Amino acid sequence: MEPSVQLRPFVLPALLLVLVGCSSEQSQRPTAAVTFEEPPQATTLMHELHGSLIGVPADSEVELALLEVNRRDQPDRLLSNVKLQGRGTELPFILKFNAEKFPQGRDVELRGRVTRSGQLIMRLPAVQVSSPANQSLGPLHLVPAP
Image (cartoon, rainbow, N blue to C red):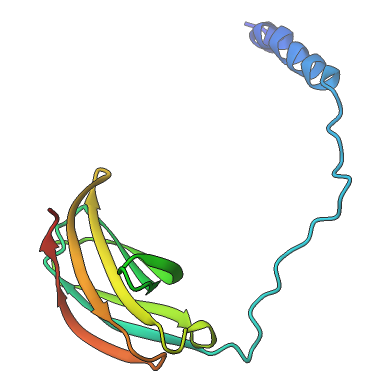
């Protein structure tokens, strides 16, 4: 068989693709300049909380959040968070946060939740964080979700 005969079935689809590409409208260019948020300055004090979570099931998702809470124990502001994957063993964590944003004289708590397939299965009881210093929280035990 001749090589041009083997390519003949591909010529028409290729030609149609070229024509379709040429016939589409030209995309509009952005009219406003794109602005980016300033990266953190070198003077930003990043501190961390670290420890480990006990009882995290394998194939689960963990979210830890450092929260400023109000007098009714409701979250007012998210200071930092981290997401982790459960392995069925003790799960170490490091949660970095900006020490300059840490509220003085307000209640701050570390809270956590564990989900599997989008359903809440466990939670971390609130842990009080009293200062913006680097802290080792040690092993923290999860409890079943209500």
